[in-house]
Every structure is written in structure tokens, then in C-alpha cells.
Image (cartoon, rainbow, N blue to C red; front, side, top):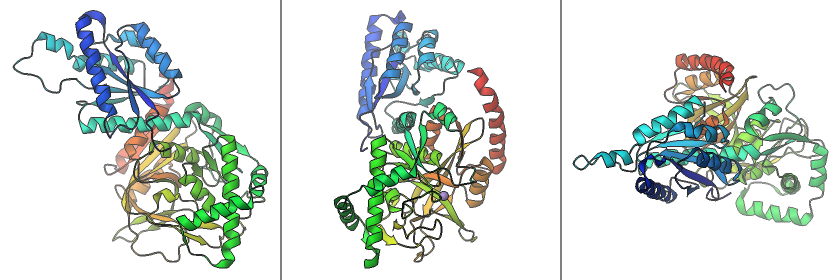
Length: 498
Ligand code: MN
């Protein structure tokens, strides 16, 4: 996916008939102008569709029902230009299943101190109209984002854009099909979870498929397909292999073409593998997984379906942004007091969307799994801002943990490390970042992104109605522990209010 412009966000303005047709005409025109201006903003990734101003309960309900069933509508921007008595919104908001953001703005930025009269005051009533609307949203316990500020401000448009990207990820996970080749790595806890609950909460369906069925597809790949893929590899990567590796590379291409066909046939956008179940597959799929992730598939190793779904949702959210998104694992620490940091990698499966420069295609033995030497691309990642996100199942809820990180250069080259790698410093530092992560039960597997920020993930978690814990430059262990304890009570009680 190159753009999110095919998706619509409906711009919805609330008002009432009390003010007379002249004022409503003005409200309509102002709303149209804001919608148009948002459409032209580089911060706004989706198409903003102006909807005629809503003045009655029936109009509001009709619009909410339409939004629910419009396949390209990701959600609503709601704005109260004037006062809109909010009992009118109860039926509609109760039915609304799409996310919405409350834009608390005003058409005119400045008070015209010399000219202001009661007509002006009656037209520009967001300051109290937005409060009436806010009350009913809170009374109905509706999750939503509130953005405050003038609609022409960059920061306001940026916040709306972030929310829209989260809505695109939410829309994706609602209908996502996750394919599992093999089960979880045996005895591993954090990659397990309740798949029925996940489908209820997120919409995604997660199902297992026989590795033998995949092998049948891998074996039916033609020599011509393999030849084409190998030529692609030669173009896209530096070839640091010897002639006796050519068979391994051809085998890797066969695996890639077979897997891709299987996923396309089933309409899957995310998948898992496990080195413990590769029956009939000659290598652990390394390059194949790296390339499929590069083309937008979500992936989780060792059967980790939650991370696979998360990586897919994050990739959709990041559409068109600079910086890549990958499956990741905290692998090894550098505890040197001069600059503690984390080396992130996996056995093979790191997405080349985060690569700095042309990746190097290599073949090396793998100590785990007892299979033939797998092909992989090896690369490093340029410094910048990044996040690690993890989704865990707490028994009575899903919890998302997000840690903002500084991606840094390694202290030296790593000439003997035969896998793609990223080096980062967690915020606020390694000790607090890792301690908070571990107290929260965050997994070793993550969705890692240099395109998204914690704000994207927070909006996404809000839409999903799941717990969200952020670890950033402001985190202290004392407060973080309190948050965890308070959340424990909150999530036990909050469902009884709905
Ligand atoms: Mn792993």
C-alpha cells in the first residue's frame, strides 16, 4: 500500500435549528472550508469528506449508521461549531462502531476585540458547545481522542493525522487474517494467548495451517519463478556468497514463492513460522520472511501471532512515512557504563524496510533447528527515533507496552554477526526502560518502527479499548508501578460500566 488516500474520514459538524437558517448556512460553509483545508494539509494522510451539518437526532443517527457500514470510512472528526444539545447524540453515538476524534476548535482564531457583538458570540460557540458534546461522550463511556487548538495550527493537523493513521491500523486489524505455519514454540508463555478473545477485541482471525500444505505449494514453484527471484536478489542485494551457495539461494527463492502464493491464496496479511515445525522445508525461512515483511506482511517468529498482527497494523499505519517497521527482538545488552544499549535482532527475520544501504545477502549455518544453512540479508540501521511495541495477554485484557528508543550506531563494526541488527538506547535509559518493560510483562518480541511514534500506538490502543503503557523520557519506576496497580483495578471494574 502506497497511500492512505483511498480511506475516508468524515468531517461531521454538530449544531441545532435554534440559530435560524442564516447561521446554519455559515456553519455549513465554515465546516466545508475546514474540511477542505485539512484535505490539503501534508499532515493529513486520508481523504477528509465534508458532511452536511447535523441538527436533529435522526440526522445524527443516520450518519452514524452509514459510517458503520461504509467500507472506506475509517472514522469521524466531530466538531461543535455552535451548541448542539447532546441528548441528540445519544442514539447515534451508542450505535457508532467506528473511531472518532473530537476536534475542539473554533473557526475564528482570534477574538475581534473591537468588533465582537452577540451575533459573533452566537456563531462561535465551540468553547461551550464542545463541552456539552464532551459530557455525553464521557457519560456514554466512549473512547475518543480530543484535539484542542485552531484548525490551521500544524500541531492540531499533526495530531489529527496521527489519529487517522491509527484508525487505518485499526481498520486493518478489524479484518486481518493471520496464518500460522506450525504452533507456538513449545513451552513459551508470552507468545501464547486467547485467540477467541483477540478476535472479539481486535477483529483479527488467527488460524493454523498444516506445514505440509505449505510444502506442497513450495514444491510446485517452477524453475522460471526461481530464476526470476534470484535475478531480483542479484539486483537488490550485495551478493556475499560463494558458488556452492547457489543451491541454497535457489531453495530460499522456492520457499519465498511458495509462501507468498499460500498467503495470497488465503488472503492473509500476517503470518507466523516456527523453527520447531519445518517438516519438509529445507531451511528456516529467513530471506523469504524478510522480503514478505518488506512487502507489507506482518510477521511473528516462533508462532507469535500477536506480534505478527501488530506488525501488520503498524505497517499500515506507517504507509507513506519515512522509516521502516519490522518484527524485532531484544537480543543482547551492552552494559558498559559509558553507554549502555541494546542490540536488537532475530535469528534471521528482520525486515529490510529498516535497512541502511544495500543489504548483504549471505548464507551461514544456524545452530538451532537442525536444517540446511539458511539465506538471509544482513544490514545495519541508521540512527534516529524509534519505538518498540508489544502486545501481551493479561488474562482479563490485552495490554500494549510502548517504549520510545534512540536508535544509535554500534560502538564498532560487527564483522562476525551474520544477521541484520539494530542498536538502540531505550528511554529514559536502559535501566529504567528495561525495568519498566519487565514489570509490565512486555514480550521479548516487538513491533519495531522508525516511522511511527508512541502517539500512533496510544491512539490505536484507545480505539481497540485495550490497556496502554508508555515508557518514555518521563517514566519513573515509582509512577509506573502505580499505573500498573491502578490499571489492574480499572480494567477489572470498567467493563461493568458499559
Ligand atoms: Mn524469537
